[in-house]
Length: 151
Image 1 (cartoon, rainbow, N blue to C red):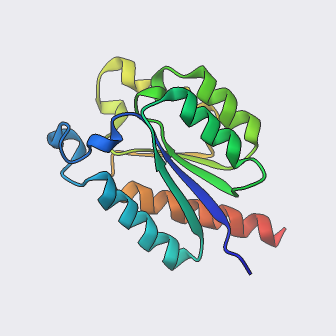
Image 2 (cartoon, rainbow, N blue to C red):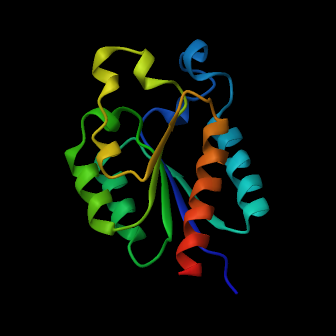
């Protein structure tokens, strides 16, 4: 039996993890985050498709590709969290469980970072727990998928 696929999608500037504002985002790189996700996926018996883009349109296209292909989406939309109605529309349209992840606690940051369009489509949100939030989000999605399969 093929393990269920979870798309792990990362938005703009996350390719700069480890270099960009380490006091806020830590020293872990995006490669480190991918390894955390790979290890969690193995433990949870799920497959992942890990991607990062700086382009809003590409991120929207990746979300759309998940319909009929993936069982869930873990997304760190980064700055598009606060600006992208197109991303919200895509996440809503695919009809999949979505866990929104942020490395920092967006609610303790600048006012403009406290609003998330993506949260309107998300099953759940994890923020402020650093890169560990990715493993927690994968665990939550694996649980959601298992619950769906038992119905």
